[in-house]
Length: 116
Image (cartoon, helix red, strand yellow):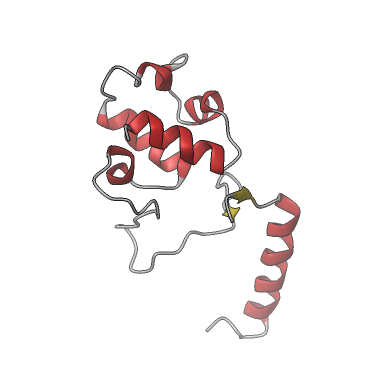
């Protein structure tokens, strides 16, 4: 499976079109589509990996684990306060309203000292 194929698959699972991924990654017009026959630059591939919350290793086929790798953190957690991040559950995007409920519950627990 090529990088293009993996990007296409992850995009579909997250409810995004390739054009949306392309634009969110800040790439030129339809750049991802050119990757059917050309090798992407590492910078562009990293930007797409961030948008899809995965690693460049997964996109390049070096691993079959599409889970993101967080090298800059001791813990492999993503801050759900980030409104730019797209979360999914069973391959479907989690609606913003659901995330708001989760944030409110967690904020309430933190205020009550239940953050551990």
